[in-house]
Length: 205
Ligand SMILES: C[S@@+](CC[C@H](N)C(=O)[O-])C[C@H]1O[C@@H](n2cnc3c(N)ncnc32)[C@H](O)[C@@H]1O
Image (cartoon, rainbow, N blue to C red):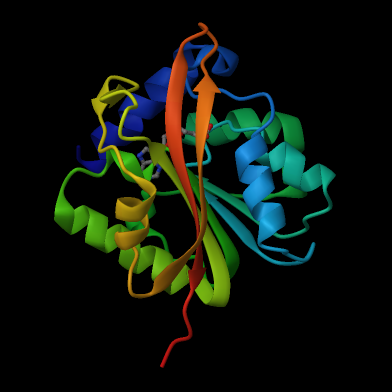
């Protein structure tokens, strides 16, 4: 999907539905918070949440005292929803993740964005963008639908991953630190299994 039509698709969703009714909605992003805590970040470490949508991760990070959080998404409508809750406590960047150039961060977080990239060239480009943004020794959390998860999300096809295959997508720049499975309960009560990986950026030569 070209960037403009992707932006229209996502703006249409966030503009027409209550965010708390969307299948990926979480009150508390518990697995993300667990993995961010496992990485042992300091409060001033820069965190970039890509495809942040209207996620409550920003609210949690602000409450925990993180002072350098950047939310980025292809949908300005999604980010506008978060701005209503946390205002200027975080920064907002409307962009296709494949075009990001935000400078270095200690943590890259992606829940349910990478899995929309079907073209291997886009997957490689994403991995290169992620590697460019994460400093040596820094971390990335990437979450996708698990192998037994749904084949579609928001009406779009997704690629499903095992922890090993997901981690492999980011080698050799990143190494797997920890993985977990989350059985997300959607607002309509169905179960959506996710694969989460916590990766660490290897030293750059
Ligand atoms: C399934 S939602 C997940 C939102 C959020 N990460 C969460 O966990 O609630 C996917 C998000 O990715 C965004 N998105 C989709 N494709 C994107 C792309 N190529 N670049 C940036 N954001 C994208 C959408 O606008 C949407 O907010």
